Length: 321
Ligand SMILES: Cc1cc2nc3c(=O)[nH]c(=O)nc-3n(C[C@H](O)[C@H](O)[C@H](O)COP(=O)(O)OP(=O)(O)OC[C@H]3O[C@@H](n4cnc5c(N)ncnc54)[C@H](O)[C@@H]3O)c2cc1C
Image (cartoon, rainbow, N blue to C red):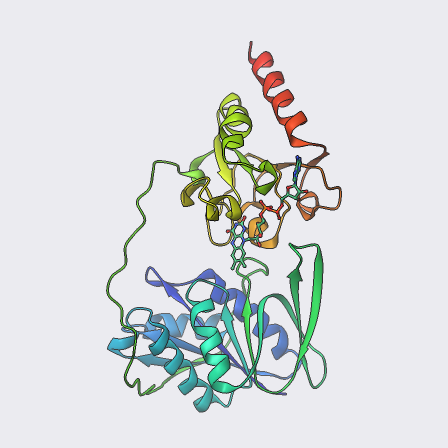
């Protein structure tokens, strides 16, 4: 039986939903006798720490310092290491968010700990902690057992947030932040090109299966237009520069809940699913019958998208007269 340290994350003045998902993971292990502690860092964050203590965080260590007011890899790593020393934690849980994947490896390296990334489930395996993580684009689930000191990152959206109330308390932690090689300069909000997928009733998203950027204007956009909807995309499409980031659906893009979501040539990796699985009705078009996207689809079409999508566009256009 060990001690778990959750590193909570604050975004836009509130604790991120992903941190309550870490609390759900930790509380699951608490059922097997593990003690749950947490770390909240920032400035003026006592109130948030108290909230977290009552929502699954256990004893919440609060590290307040000017260097922690905004994210910096150095300062957050130092604060986490101080919290590990103060709590005696042997399992550190960090969200697999952009800041999480920046400082979690530094914490693991400094602790010489086992490092398990992008998990979606956790269990006590009697002397080891078991983790589940998706591999090969979501086609296989790997089971990993780790012993000793472990740092794990957890995929946001992969597990429901902790809903109950718990008895916790807050304790001040002097993280003793020393010299930092990186420092916060400013936050720049990316300029939006006018696409707001969160407001669209219908989204037709294209993935790597489209094969080339021009196929979005030739194949995906006409169907989106015929349905009066918007066009979306998976991350590789955005990474390749085929479409700007505001089109990206998924854990590092937009979370959308349209009435109708049509996934075209998208495999259904967990990072994409967490961005669209709350859609009211999901249609998936993929030539691979084993594509994981079909697990969340209300209607699945196993076919070549270049046959189906133009035919669908023509049918919708004809039906509208
Ligand atoms: C930290 C992290 C964050 C991430 N965030 C996101 C995110 O926000 N959003 C996101 O989407 N991904 C994200 N990813 C990437 C994710 O893991 C997958 O790599 C990605 O979603 C795969 O995109 P895809 O489905 O378009 O491509 P692929 O997985 O390559 O799938 C292409 C699909 O097209 C099908 N296909 C090919 N040709 C045809 C055809 N002619 N007709 C029909 N079907 C065809 C194939 O069968 C295949 O299933 C993230 C990954 C990490 C590690």
